[in-house]
Structure formats: C-alpha cells, structure tokens
Image (cartoon, rainbow, N blue to C red; front, side):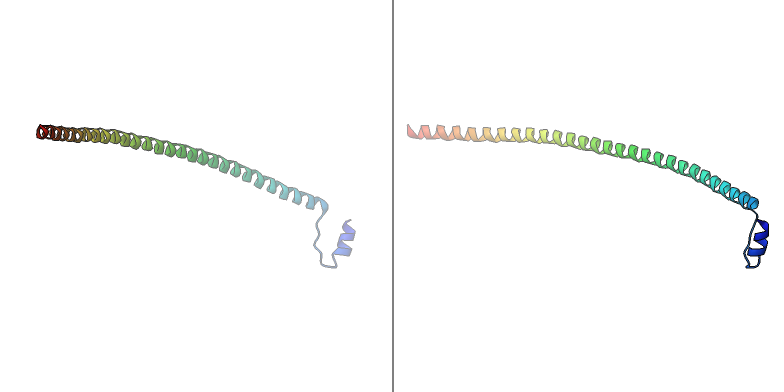
Length: 118
C-alpha cells in the first residue's frame, strides 16, 4: 500500500513507484525487447539468404572448376594419345626400313658365301 511504502520504505532511502507505473514500465521494456527481437530475426533471415546464395555460388564455381579440369585433362590426354600414335608409326617405319637393310645385307652375304663355295 502507498502508506507502507512512504512510511516504511521512504525512511530507509528506497525508491519506489506505484504498481501501475511499474507494470506500464515493464510492458514498455518488453515491447522494446520484442521489437529488437523481431528486427534481429529479420536481420538473421537476411543473413541466411546471403549465406544460401553464397553456398549456391560456391557449389556452382566448384562444379565449373571440376568440369574445366576434366575437359583440360581430356584435351591433353587426346593430344598425348595422338602423339603416341604418331611416334609408334614413325618407330614402325624406321624399324621396317632398318629391317629391310639388314635383310638385304644378309642376302648379299649369303650370295657371297654361295659363290665362294662353288
């Protein structure tokens, strides 16, 4: 009651306000907290959207980089395979030519040996 508040608490140096004033003050504080919470929720939702977009962009960039690596690898593999084929053909040609030279030399030696044995 206001009599007790002024007589008992007033002498000791306590501050006091009426219950209706305290209630409206607490309601105002709660409204302020609720409004701050709503604004914070809006900010968090905005941040979540930014993070989602960043994640999607990161995933897209990752997929593109992976695709580019595979394409580059396949390109160079094809070049290497073509070069390998060319080198094997060149080796086969050189081998065939040298084999022919050696075969001709063996034939000439065989002919010379046959003439010498007559």
